[in-house]
Length: 305
Image (cartoon, rainbow, N blue to C red; front, side, top):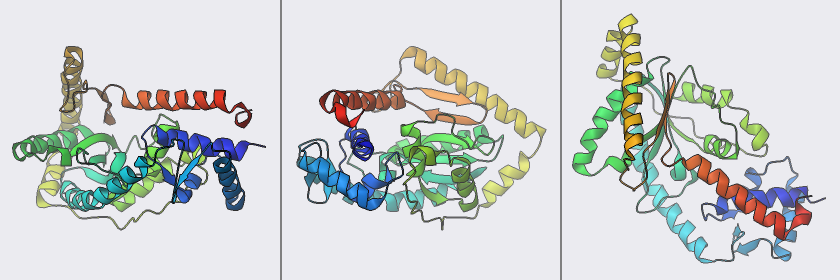
């Protein structure tokens, strides 16, 4: 009887972790069960009447806090400007060797930013050349520190064409995948989304509204490097850079070194992927989400039978 109500509460509980209220369309998109829109709207009205969910103009939240609406609107406005910057940067980064696809991830992909926000990029590289691509990109990033623009070039997650399927299958990764904003490399990004259609099991109502008219093309530098390392030597170099980077980051983690935001640095690496996870961010988000669900289970047990 309460399946729809339960699903709505779970959606709002997840985004409550980020203190981010949602509008009606967004709540429907992130439901974890197929649902008729009329039945969904009735369930949402019922939860509001029961004061389980709080409505402020067009937004809904589990928190009775109208200041979150002002915070969201301000963040949405800042995101518009940051996305313009991200589009220009992605066109530039796409000209680097072995880069096959670029998308914006993180809070900006949900149309939110603040004064301290980074521009996070999800990058797909050619198979077995991830570590050459990542190394060249991060050598370039060193120069951005000189002009104080390093937060515009947060290349936090790399996969290559051999590892398009994201192995962790949970609500966090499902939301992150479906909200990625493609900016460069149409063919490769389409392939990535097709390979990760498992997200439909978690978010069966999600309606994709991606603009896949992304940047294409390359550069003389890109073509030359790719030609020069299209050999056994290129694969050996990629393997070496993988091992070297892994050892370097393991040492950083052992030393408890922190990034500019004061978080202990962590890099998960493999032959076909590289992802930053400072202070196990994903695990913390999932823990907080499940804690919130547990609280609502105690307060409203009839919705979770």
